[in-house]
Length: 201
Length: 201
DNA sequence: ATTTAAAGTGAACATATGTTCGCGAAGGAG
DNA sequence: CTCCTTCGCGAACATATGTTCACTTTAAAT
Image 1 (cartoon, rainbow over the protein chains, first blue to last red):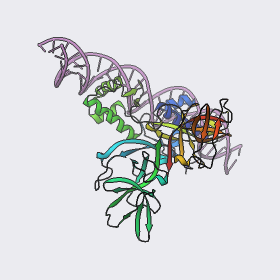
Image 2: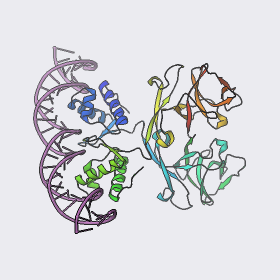
Image 3: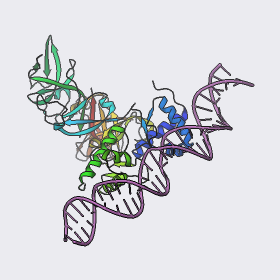
Image 4: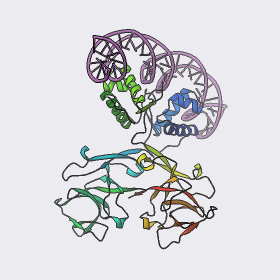
């Protein structure tokens, strides 16, 4: 998909990325012109080429309208959820407890949220009290996946398992008991699938 | 520290943050003028006030030169290090193996880098093979902290312990042996202190 | 040798954009 | 009431900036 770039195109792209990182905003045509030691019109052409090859997006006519295509790295804003009451929409603003910016290599596409892990019910999966769990919002999950589920009005992590036709939420700690998940969405509701764990020291 | 904002100032700040998130770059004075339904000169004054109160930084004369001050959330670019050879400066470009954007609530201030954990020597601390370790670059560490150390030309995680005058790097796995760290920086060198662990599923 | 695409230049143009100026209104402090 | 700050307007100004044009150069492909 990513077409081959010429030397100067690559250099221009690198410069744009670096400028963005250092300055916090995109360079102008003349910024690039000065850095690359090329005329504005030359830079303009190079930008058109970069856009055509899909590496950047330009907002025509707007100053500093260069956007680096979300190819490798960018960040997404993930809300950290506090208390969650049963039945309420999971992503309602009310239970926001702050947010965190995470690299797209962690979160990928889709609706995400984060939970602070409390308790030791997943210690067997090396997930500890205080860890931040990054969850992909979903009502379904595959067997073997660790899911965030709503139990008694509280969100917890459990590993999803199937035995024949029956589905269980398994804590990874022998001190806790499995919970059966019935079809009628009885006692438990799957909120999403665990995609990452972040632990701070 | 953050001075009280007037209603319109708060609204302007919110608008700037939102614009930045949605568009990927800062708004112009006239963008704000249009959104807030105020004249450009009014917006200009409000921006000056916001700058004076420390909420934004402006690059005078530059278009889209509004930068939101590092208040609550922003991200830092952390290099992921691959192979590290003894003696070489740790953050030399040569062993970059990509990078990751992380929230400032994870990395804080200071020089950081990341390592991919390989092996199970820290399984007792619930750090697994494949985890990403976020390290604060430092030559010193307190006892009890988990450090990244250079052993035989390879970076590994160990917990730092002291016994009298002697310092040891302890793997958290009974299958591995402690390594003594001598004053003369003999067999091992401390690269930094573990600040976070990220695990992907 | 001829053709073609990319790279390059410098000047010119159109407009996007930050800034200044002079003026007025609203509201709190004294 | 007066003083002061903030908020407000519209016009004007200076320049920053994207874009176009006409033409040349370079390098690779035919």
